[in-house]
Image (cartoon, rainbow, N blue to C red):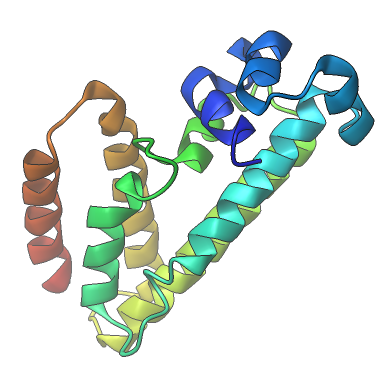
Amino acid sequence: MEKALPVFWKHGFANTSLQELEKATGVNKSGLYAEFADKGDLYLESLRHYLRKRQEEEFLTAKPLGWNNIERFLKLGPYSLEGQKGCFSVNSMNQFAVLPPAAQEIVSKGRAFLKDLIARNVEAEKPTMKPTVLAEMILTFFTGISMEQHLRVSKASMNRKVDDFMKAVRKL
């Protein structure tokens, strides 16, 4: 997983070749197919692996819950794993039309889980708006900044955007 994930992350599901996966993992085609039914199966496992690692980061579960967790998630989340920029799960959303249905379900459940964690942090701050509405806004902002990472936006520029966004959100 550690070696296949960056290949899928860089090229996407449809544009990742079996040869690239063989080269990255050091496992030949027959070895890959002995372990995984097909490229889609390997992608699913890569996505599950990614989401498990994201949950271990605990950006949104540190105590006390609140705005600081959300701000840390927005600033560090798109930079955190595998030396890649953006979010593998967000990248997967861009490919829904070609992904196996199971991958679509994994991404959707992952987003619902994130939204719930964000909502718990928002709720801890006692906002005037409904926490689930704010959580959806925050998750949408995260999706946008994750996608911008592919445009090579500087970290300083990204942090400024997060700071400005958080100033606005804290007032809601």
